[in-house]
Image (cartoon, rainbow, N blue to C red; front, top):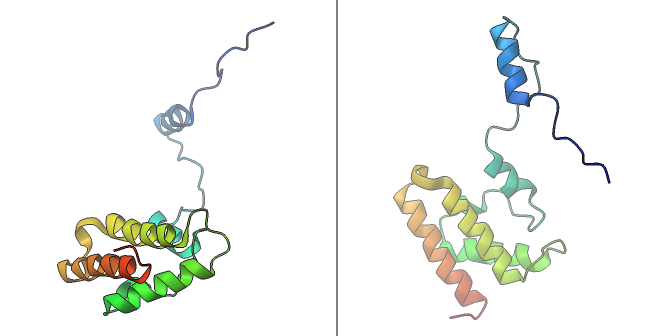
Length: 121
């Protein structure tokens, strides 16, 4: 059985650096979306979220919307509660320090409300 040799061509990074050293600009590609986490919340296979759900003012409405989306979804891989909670947690984590304190607190209250609505207190 013959052993295959490892990659014989230089890596993409090495080719890019070599091209830049010769004065060539790297090949132009279509720019990737600036915020991949935004794409996840919009196009996730887990849930079809209502637009602006995380910006609602009432934690009960946020939780109700997430619950409705999770229960109606036929593409989710886990239970409805787990899918809804993970999407909410994902949004909070990805927003990081840029999320205003008032909105972060509102979303944390929405987590507790989601738990209550699913009867998991």
